[in-house]
Image 1 (cartoon, rainbow, N blue to C red):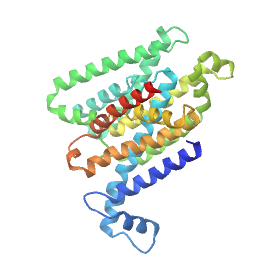
Image 2 (cartoon, rainbow, N blue to C red):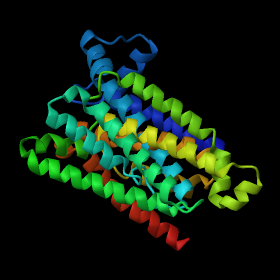
Image 3 (cartoon, helix red, strand yellow):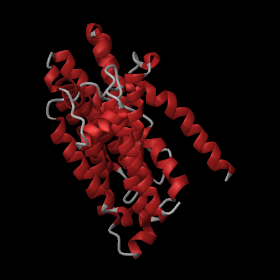
Image 4 (tube, rainbow, N blue to C red):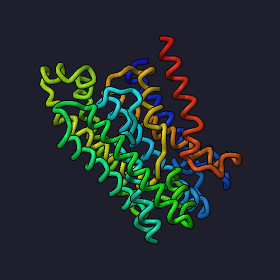
Length: 326
């Protein structure tokens, strides 16, 4: 599909999805009435509808879009940096570190600090992994970074399990945070969402360099790319994006795997189109995963991370099967 049509289709799907999910819910507003009221064509929102649309549903939808876009963008970056199609946003232990930070805040009795501690935990984990890589790794090897991430992630998970065993009375709260939710955005979510969008835009500016690094470090170097510097910048940006997203929503899997692979089959592997389109479709995927929880009674008791896993895992296997037949 031509690139221009890919963007038109993505933004049309985004607009329709947002309007549908803002108008639908326990209090049915009606799609036609919602659009007319939004555009000022005769109808007006009632005071109750204003409250439902802008105070209750919009924060949840904005958070879903931003977190989904963040995870998909980080997924594209990790797969390009590690040259591994199975790399995902949590590969450097960000999820484990964030969960450990959130658990400490819950156990200490500071619910207002859960998002902050989750961000600190996620970004600290990446800093430790990078420090270990800088001290012990073979120069230019990305494998040591990957292995250090796996080791630190396992250590963080072990510490989390120990805390949950020692403080069993808070286990349910920690468990639901780990499973992910966009139902209760933190108070400062507009600022965090804006900062994530800024980081995504900056990341998209490195699309050409990621294309060349994906081909090979040596080829990229001879074509003028400072490979080590670009790799560190991209790792830092993807770590910040993922940590901020996880701090607001908990751990939500498969968005960072499914969105990039789906888009590669559709638009090709160029990061110029892959990065922004993955961000848009990642946001739409998480938006509808949360929409199922709001609209379908049989999904209402599930955390959104479980819904993304239920649909994401089979879909990811189908993508792998389809690519294997090509």
